Length: 294
Image (cartoon, rainbow, N blue to C red; front, side, top):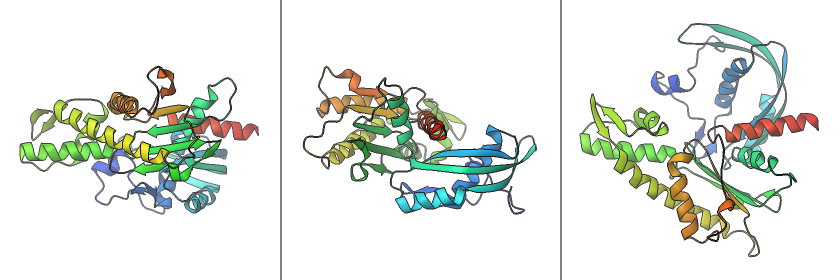
């Protein structure tokens, strides 16, 4: 609730808002004000204490320019009155937060930092992170640096793409208009039966077909990005994370082997992130805590 207006956030925005604002378009951060609204909505749920100092660690799409990242970091700092309402219970929480510091990095860096933090020597490693979410992200860390020209967001090979393709196939099969958001929950929960106009439809085969297709496109992009690295570069680890990990994991791993990006015996070079839906966020929490210590 802000300036005498109410904004739906999350699932309510998908299902009940007539006007929708997407914070990322074509894999790039566009609407900083909308990002701020989402953060404000989350902070009182994390802690309802008032006059609290906050340090934020935020992940944004890797396609976002450094200038936009700096703008976001600058805009978020300061003292803010925050008021939110639970639409179901009508409960209102009003707090004041003081955002002291903001660290902004590409979102997949969270999983990279989380994995590196688990290594004994805690040193930088050469790695690629494939984050499988509404937008897929490929992030490359080489020689201790984030390599932007070897990283990208894939808007055409992602969980969103899978929902669009399955919805299109169902539309032809049922002759009904099907919005991808109506089946996205089923896909996220790995449910193969969806209800269309009160009738059940099995999406197992069509889902498997498009998962293979999208996984192949993701790895093709990965191979292309790796050609931009120096000839002597050798990626030590391929880290796979994101909420759609279970959907795409097997196919991506198989194609990585087929493309000979790793040897047959180097199974441990592909790392499947634990708690993949929150792995990026957990990494940013660890990073923020380290910055506090510094």
